Image (tube, rainbow, N blue to C red; front, side, top):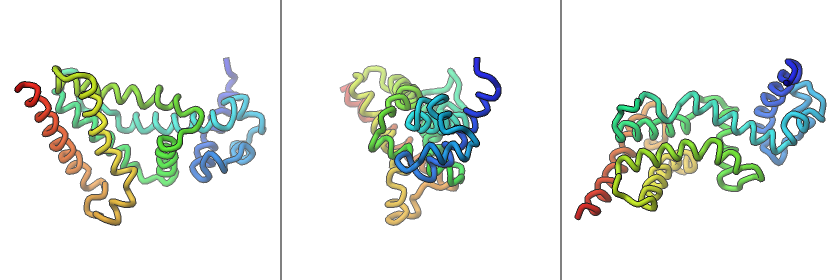
Length: 214
């Protein structure tokens, strides 16, 4: 069992890692800077986390855990909720996480996470399996309830379409701000965007359902 001192050192390293990685990214962050900020020995990153990349992944996992606690995908729904209600909660949560809380450090960590999806580092698989797959499985379950007669390929393509609509507001944020600033994701229009994604997605789902019934 780790001593209180060891737990304290690990927590300080994680907090320092958030700041240093948010400012410099994985490539330019140094163990020396992280340990200096944490007031820890330079060997402590390897001792507590197994190296710089492992600490980096832990920082991103911690960021995701905080976001999922702040805006869980099933917020406001119950086992008795309809699939449509569950899907709306899922989409709204996704957009709220994308919008962020206005904290510059969290915004930079969010950009690092996007970079991981584009150019994964060695340990990115851990993030996918621990954080992304469970929430994506939730979406697949919702779609199976909406399309009980559909094959898994159709379910997966529907999930990709819905996620694609949500991540557009993150991946293409600057382009949207320049071309259609009135459509950029803001706290004031998040309900409207949620409703539109729902309308567009349910319309497509209804079309697939109707085609299978013919």
